[in-house]
Image (tube, rainbow, N blue to C red; front, side, top):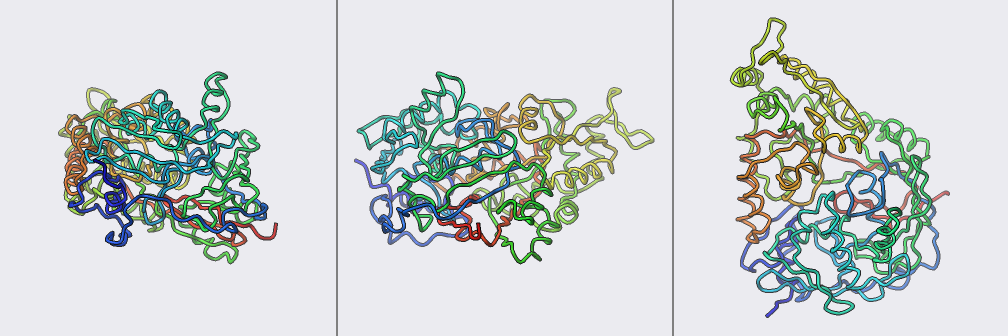
Length: 560
């Protein structure tokens, strides 16, 4: 017999990886901010009451055009494809997901109107909202949901959520408005996975067209439609006038007031800043202290912090000598002064990272600091000796006639240049020479997937402790596991965490995995960034949603 999902799920909505079918006697994993007590939870998962007609169906677009900066453009509009910063900026507005999260991490219905979870946690049945259509005019029904996830399982190998999608054993159409997901084992990550824009529902007609032609872009049901795309210059999204099924995370749940959004491709952060100050763009994300200070003095700009559950790390190519030696990785990690990086490269804005997970995710614990490879140049040099390296009179290290040196690869996004320069200086201080190579994000991803690097300065943003599996699991090598790290003991713990529905036990599994990871040192976690949205005050009604998404359904741009 099935129980109503809301009474089971709502106590767990603060868990970034919701354990929707866990016994109701267990305690939720809580992330800040803590949600309200669940004693008043409704007994069924349903969408909120529709807003008034004035909210859901504005008579005409009257909000002008919002112009945003984009560091790099996507290769193709495919939510199931390889991720990059440009794709993640665009797809939330083109594709709707079954559920979303609000700014407080609460699960909110979007395309799914209600759902039920079986007692054994191996089946989730969803009722879809009525009257939803794709931008090509076709209905968004259970068959479309089935087609979306079947395609994902077959060809979405480059997606960061592919491993979680693979756990779906079946997607069955119960009727036109009802779809059932089945699993061989209960999964603790299903809800966090399907709330991400990568899980956007796709028009089956567009799936067929792209498959047959080998080109084109997929079509969703989002509040904006793909307009003009000038390669290397800009992408324009046009208002979807038929939209009336938005989630209750904005006041206006109908078609946006904006006529369009334009993304201008501007790779350089300083150029983005100048464009914002000149009024050529309305919104940019910044993470450089001097840019923040400059904009704080600009009365026409509003700054708003965004929490993205992010981590900046220094990674090592674990399959390439000599970085395949754990002692070498530990030595280089001990050479890194995180305080210097935070204070000099970031102006003190951010938080030192002590573990592979940021404090905003369940699974982080202050006790992990005792396992951290902290700054200690003497220990770094001692470990290099243990690894069989000898130091010459000029301070460099060599083993079997090979000098210890490497190439540090990173993207050309700020403040990577300043951080990389400090890492280069800190490693030089122990006698290790590093050359810095900066490429655009796509080129970095291509190079790392092929193993063409020694060290990597990189970042991840994720909404669940399963980030450890996505970025360090053996099955992700050659994809999101860019450092080629593999440890069967870690894989086992992460697999158990993926299926564990008892929150306390799940946390413990991720703690144990992180202890091993910190000693294996595939990464040296550096800092947790504080990202800031800088937006022109002529933009009215904008706010930051979950994972830093700019919510624009209520936006109007004045003086255009």
